[in-house]
Length: 153
Image (cartoon, rainbow, N blue to C red; front, side, top):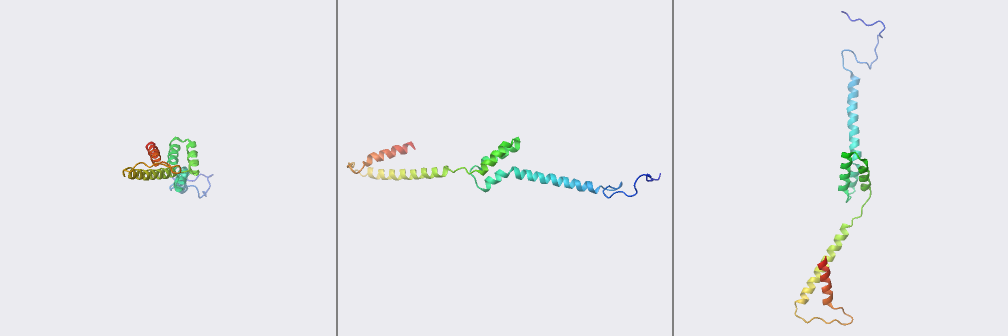
């Protein structure tokens, strides 16, 4: 059987049609383009999703861990409010109350240790207790008050 062309078929086919015995080059090109586009959109999605975490990490915020947790929660639950909350936390700067309070506590500790050392050196000397005059406070009373305050801390 010889294959003859149908009389109504065009004698010249357009370039974008695949020959019957060959590979469809345009389909292969579109497949590669589709895979590359899906990969690019996925990378773009991951970069956008990790934006709050990267912002908090770059500016070395104290709430970095909270922002990271909110990002993971939003990733696994698909609740976008967690992502927005993480973004807002990454943008604002929460004041650091811990460092000044630690500094104050350290200074108070040093003062308390210095007053304890002074009280023990005067108390062991065997001298009679100092009588306070009108212009000078009684040291034994102030040392007792300091020890009481230190006992509460």
